[in-house]
Length: 249
Image 1: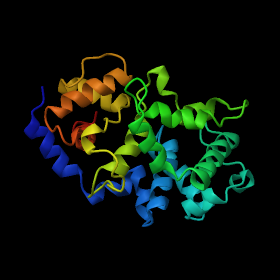
Image 2: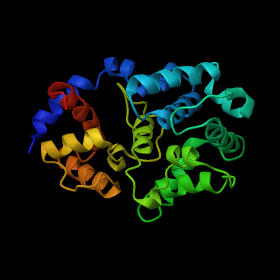
Image 3: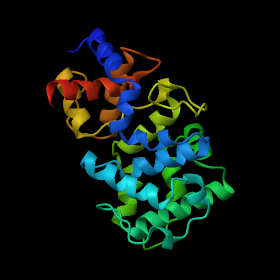
Image 4: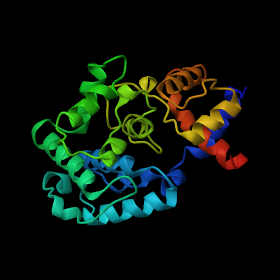
């Protein structure tokens, strides 16, 4: 099993501002206004899957469409604004549906912070993401397609919810890389963003025994990381990244 000292050294090496330029967190880092940051972060998290160079390119295109004004883009969203924009599973109608729901959220219900705070305070099956996704599903038209459900996955299915865990880490943890603009929950309650890469590295480190890359694996890994830092377990997301870089995993 890897030691706390080894993990902490990896965090020190990789949790720096230089990390930002090659990560999807570069997009919310372009903004100063709180709601611009959270909307930009949420949009970036929707598309952050597949090959990094490809989704970064597509996000550049999407933020150009939004004229680098995320809040204004959402408040005044119309489907015609995104034209034929798509990325893999996500088709124009999927993005339009999500952006229209965000428009209602910001016009009537406060915004993403209020939604995630509600999810945190009203967890279902000990999962704060269920009330969040239920908000989206309650407003889905009957013709919602695969792309919508891929970008807004249903936590009731037991998936790892990697991109939502990542987005929440961005909003709750503090600098130098994350923002720390949401105060309704402590960093100690964050969950590690788990994908195939992180899961493989975690097993090599002896931090994960579960074979499936699901929500139970997220809880197991997070709980093991809490043994190294109970107040800030998701800081080790940087250690996983660094370990993968150093060992070309």
